[in-house]
Image (cartoon, rainbow, N blue to C red; front, side, top):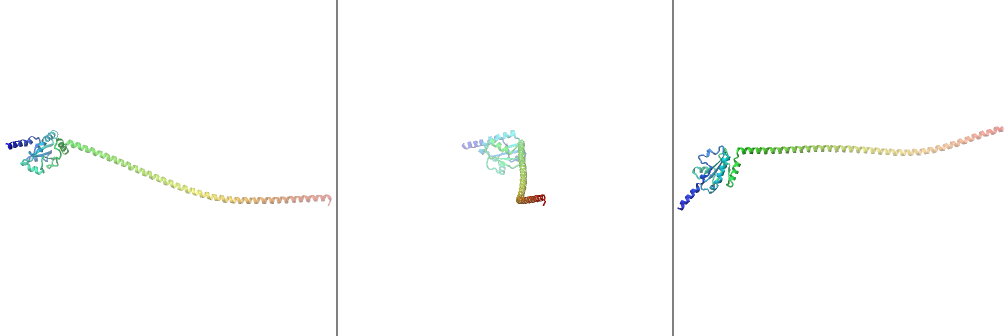
Length: 265
């Protein structure tokens, strides 16, 4: 009696997967759906898997969600406990349950396996990241294009700033060159001025020497002039004295002659 009850209980629990909404795939119809135009999310399960049974409600929500929003996504299931399906499960490396694989359009080999909590939101997040819709691809492409344009603008702005920096550096170098040339010119002019000053100083020294020599000669001439003046005075006085004497003698002689004449001598 107990065995019969256990069998009935097992049959009731084992019947849970018949109420799941996912599309049923088997070895007979698998090739009709894999590698075609749709994204395929395939749940490999067994009726005796308690985890598969617990996940059934969440997976039903996933099926209804994509049936209403994404007809290009097929949410499917495969019973690996059925004899006809076992070689398929083995071919895809399914050894534990549930195993959920993603098959992209045009490929009959899975490219991703679900590895997260078996909750509706995690399923949707995983599937959306793999099975982008045309609108999502367009939005992603536009976003990538916008990002590329932004990066291009940033690169162009960076190039512009670099160009300005280079131009400023060139201008600064040119200014430094002009300043250096101006300083060198000023140094050359200063050296020329210094040489001119040295020449003037040399000429001044020569002039001072000549002035000193002239002063010496002038002093000598002054001494000679004084001697000559003194001699002239002496000679003049002597001449005057001689003249006076001779005049006196003449006068005396005339007077004597006059006296003699009066006496009749």
